[in-house]
Amino acid sequence: MLLIVDANIVLSALVFKGKTGEIFEENKVFGMLELNAPEYLLEQIEDNALEIMKKSKLTLEDFKSVLGFVTSQIRFIEEDKFSEFLHEAEKISPYKDFPYVALALSFKSKGRDAPIWSNDKDLAKVPEIKVISTHELCELLRSWGFLL
Image (cartoon, rainbow, N blue to C red; front, side, top):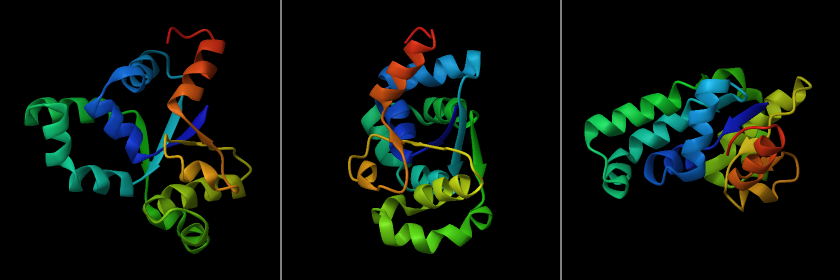
């Protein structure tokens, strides 16, 4: 399943682990998800690294290890690959989420359904794109026979 990963998902995997972490663990083994994100996600993580480490109580070494585990499963896409959709995305999405929406619109223009994996309720209100929450993704993966 093709998905676009929002920063809040990566943050959740780093800070809270839980179901989000389990999804990444199972995906590493079974490869059931094709995860993508704009390079912007890395900027968001970098900008908030100290706060993430404080909340998660991870050492710098552990933070880098967990972040590496999670990001190794994500294909990061350069902005110039979906830049033609940025202006439209800025108009229809919450400000901090417009790169994710632009990437989703880019996939959509190529006939590929790429929901955004996010727990952001404001983002879920954007009618032009589909958003799937961690809870919904867990239910879907269970229906496919995965352990979650």
